[in-house]
Amino acid sequence: MPAPLSEKQLRSIRESADARVSIWHGSVRSGKTIASLLAFLLALRRAPATGLILVCGRSLQTIERNIIEPLQDPGLFGDVADEVRHTRGATTASILGRTVHLIGASDARAEGRLRGLTAALALVDEATLVPEAFWTQLLARLSVPGARLLATTNPDSPRHWLRTGYLDRAGELDLAAWHFRLDDNPSLSEAYVAALAAEYVGLWRKRMILGEWVVAEGAIYDMW
Image (tube, rainbow, N blue to C red):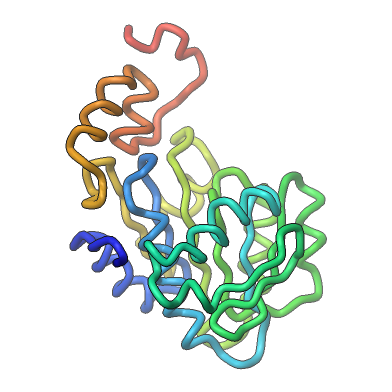
């Protein structure tokens, strides 16, 4: 049986349907990825027949690990997992009967892989790890009426381009965002949450448990 969803996860899935750009950000294991994948599946069902469907990430391997493998897990997605087909190493997958293109974006040159294409839907895994030029080009390629971009990320520096250029400007843009903390994930045991919370201190506690965007530079003695 798929794990139950929290009210925050359900709310983010509902609200994402009304935004051109949706960003789930916060701590590790906080439930943000599962919410974004469910929103992606719903968006895929409703996506226009024209325009490409894209899943983007740091590399093909991270896309396979963070997106494709969870989607193929019946414990997470029930019978839908049978409708996710992919051969490891291939740059396309079939999800709910639609061809999905998998694009790695490890450096600035990756932006060239998007030129010339027209997209209807895109999912970006760990958005803070893709180059800004790639993100900007991707937004430009989402030109089909009703096109949408969904993205997840762990927090980074508060000066990161995704924070300053998009999350901090959500009120000016057609953008919805949701912040998740470790204790927002209802599928985690209390013992696991307590253990992880005890293991992280200082900077890493703020980022990995509380999901805060904090500066890492000069943080050798971050407890001060």
